[in-house]
Amino acid sequence: METIKLFKLFLSTPSDVAEDRVVISGLIDEWNVQHGGPIHIRVELIHWSTHTFPTTGRRAQAAINQQAFDKSDIVVGIFWSRFGTPTGHYGSGTEEELRRGIAQKKQVMVYFSRCRAPKTPLLQYSKIEAFKRKLGKHALYCEYSDLHSFEQFFRNHLALVMQNLQKKAKRGK
Image 1 (cartoon, helix red, strand yellow):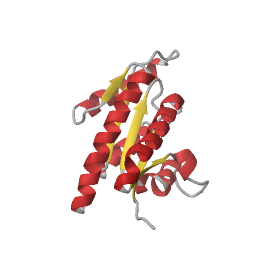
Image 2 (tube, one colour):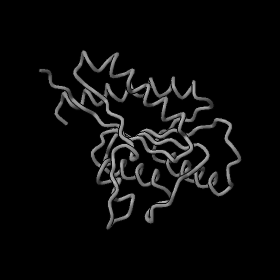
Image 3 (cartoon, one colour):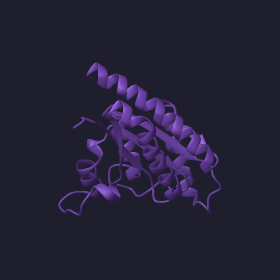
Image 4 (tube, one colour):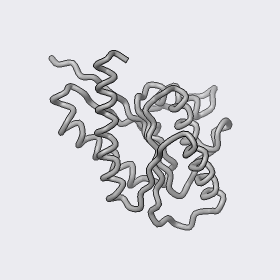
């Protein structure tokens, strides 16, 4: 029997980036096959739609946080043409998850798609741009213009993040 160190990657996105989510899922699988086995590390993709269950008595986002988000080590956020649904505390679930991840000192990676979008309502676009401006004052984010470039960026970023997390795990932090 072998021991595997599991890192959980929480994917935080509004509903409009389905193709980007597929890219991330495939790249995590690729990383696990190519790199994870020999070093006894695995990355598990976590998303609220697969890792939560219906419950009552609290805000929906609070349930997502408790059931799935708080157990993650890495947070990946992607914006394209939608900012998302307000949570009662933040402008969207994605914004709440990213800000929560930063506050909890998780590894947070944020991406902004510049792919041609369907007609984006001005309010959605302005929310995304305002969030990006605020984030950019205290963080490095990535923009991409097509899914191929996103795949290249994320493959590289995942490898770099996993190297950093592996080093931290070896030091016991």
